[in-house]
Image (cartoon, rainbow, N blue to C red):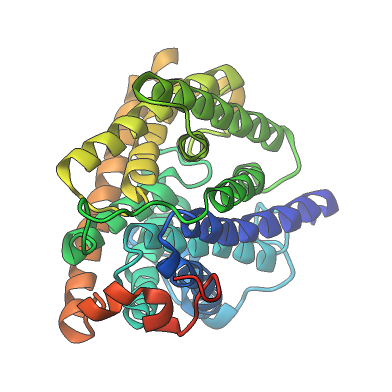
Length: 402
């Protein structure tokens, strides 16, 4: 046991926990007034529900002893055999590692909600969260981090490019396919209700991301310091490039700037412990460009991923995972990428991306279809018109203001 490492991962776990309320504010400010409470509630309810399910079965499916390189066994069911002593090769308590990883599972589910706000049934969302945690998140986390086949292949994912961001983005896209567009899309104004709230949420995400990436070193060491620097650098580069991109077509917006920052944070996540700060500049800058293009393309096609989960987290995660295979350097993380002559690493990253996308999309599509047939995914038309705050929760965010 190392007290310094333990202290840092305790702090990092708390930082990552704060990111889910950050997501709530980030998403909440972008929806219409009548759906603000509903959007906040989705993230907060996920924080509670997945916290419970993670200790019951989520952790063991993700990090239990390997079964055929596909999923963990039930050794840790209900946190059996998970105690205060560190596991082999670790310097922090097993309980702390479990909780740190649990925060990643929580925010991954919360991220998905941004694509389906303003029209999904709250009760169905809760059931979806539990089933998706067991059948999609658990296996993919095991493939990459728990001893499964993607990790065995040698794929690099420092803090969740595949496990969190591609997984969430592609799963969100599958739900959008099933739900369809919001009523009145393109015909009614759907302006954000509170852009300062969006900026506050993004700031909490940026702040929490230091624990998200820096904590993924699982120690208070040089790798954590490198992840700190690369995280901030990529976020800053993406935010500034997004400002320049939006300036070309109209005026630089605060909403665009904070979206760019999140895109940079997403893209650096898998690479944070494997690349230099100068590589992080490039990763962040390109993330802004590809995510900006993805959002423009989505808008032209009328695909109603309400808050651009696929455009930012899915596309940004794909670029970040591939960029890890390009810019990784053995001097930082022990593995060289394509720029250092190891073209094979880029191929391995591409396999990890493709496998995650395919499993997440089709798995989520099946889960969503079953839930749609049994419980119904979408609220009734009248409920959508009046808003999910009143129809699902009986509350209004701004008192008597409609």
